Image (cartoon, rainbow over all chains, first blue to last red; front, side, top):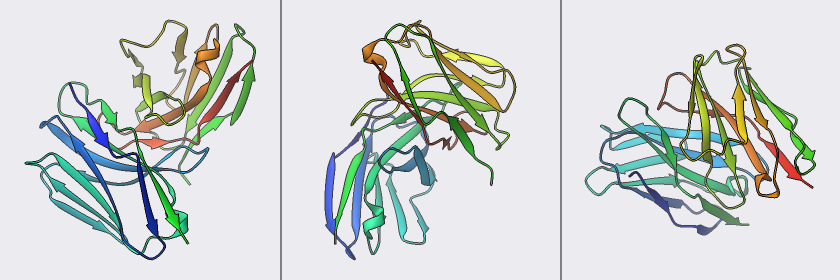
Length: 112
Length: 112
């Protein structure tokens, strides 16, 4: 079955780059997503990448996809205290019903 | 702004007393989802509507029901809440299955 794994915690200093990693198991993934969740709030879609791409950049965010290793990463440049949140990696699987599977989330702590 | 709205943001109910959570959307998306999220866990899909078609996840308890009277609204009914049902309930929408989902702010349910 599908499975998405992430490390639980990452701590960085303000102004540094953050890299959050994710691995997934299903090679038939079609879309891979990054969501951000601040305390007590819903999930905010940050960015997503189609499985035939290997990189996507959007302002301070860079997504890298290594399809061979089933590895997805999110790089946040010039990390700010407002970036402190939980980041969820998610995938959707090609098929009749494309269920989205979420990882457990990586808590990013930004130290001023 | 197009958005997903959930009411109420906080709901307290008594053990065994039925409760209804509501979700509305102005995105005109044809798919609406209900997730349950417990502390430090990934969102767990309960069920979704593809237009008027209801799709229940295999492990969703019978205690949880849903209604979608029109495109814009979707309700989550918990018939007899137990203490284990205390969680954040997230509504999401997407244009088609397996595509990026847009989340509401969530309803925090407390069961006393």
